[in-house]
Image (cartoon, rainbow, N blue to C red; front, side, top):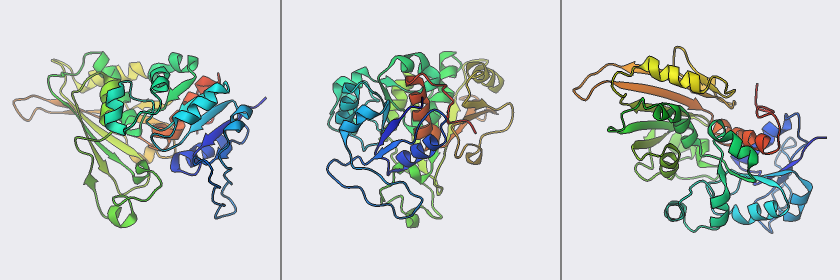
Amino acid sequence: MKRKVAIVGASGYTGRELARLLARHPAFDPPLLMSSRPGVEPDAPETSFEPRLEKLDLERFRDVDGVFLCTPHGAAAPYAREAMRSGKVVVDLSADFRLKDGALHGSVYGEDHGPDLRAAAVYGLCEHARAAIARARLVANPGCYPTAVTLPLLPVLAAGLVDLAADVIADCKSGTSGAGKDPKKRTVFGAVHDNFLAYGVGDHRHAPEIAQTLRTDRVLFVPHLLPVFRGILATLWLRPSPGVRAADVRACLRAAYADEPFVRVYDKGLPELQFVQHTNFCDVGVADVPAAAPSGARIVVISAIDNLVKGASGQALQNMNLLLGLPETAGLLP
């Protein structure tokens, strides 16, 4: 018997991407697609091939096995509570339940509407929390930048291969879809075309999430906006511990992710956006940088993901597969 899930907020980029992935999922019936705006009738489809969204109706959570929340930040708590009250599992793609520190959450995202839920939520970085996710009822889906940064760094930090007396530089570039569907001054075509810029320097809301996941504040995260629609390329500059070379970092990553279906560690060469777009892969490559100053050599780790898939909807589907006891790769492999 096939499962059924609901997507609340199915008109945005992540909701649409989820609907696309679920359409080919072998274990799911077509999803229930709902608006995230209570009391508002969704707009009719503009073309014959777009799905029709239904009006938000929390009573219909009773008819599904799981709920994806693709709501704006600050809006997820009442929907998560109702779904869980109905005995359903929930994957939230907003940031409402990612940060464990309540004061920090308030300073980054504003008023906290679900401190009880945030305390109970499991942070859904699948490769590092698989067992906890499988036992959870509510999963906080990681942010796109944190996914691209923490997947390569977690194993090498745990192995002591990085000298944290120096900052780790996380120089990251994202496509415009990371800012969401609603038009913004910096993401409209005229601002992006033939342009490249840094933004959120020193105060981007994903920086605390990266620090929480890596358990260090030594990551200096600087995001940039690329003139492309989808994809993130993260360039991570590390000062290695004494005697550590790129080959050691590469070997560590290969060992950590040898059995992971969605993390590909390169033997040679470096990742590019075109290799991961429209997939759930995180590609990782490693390079030596010869010492050019008294401060010593650096190692550069490059990761690439599709921010809408591994950075959002694909990882959310990984999480839902685990929550429902389905194969983790179902609906996600090419």
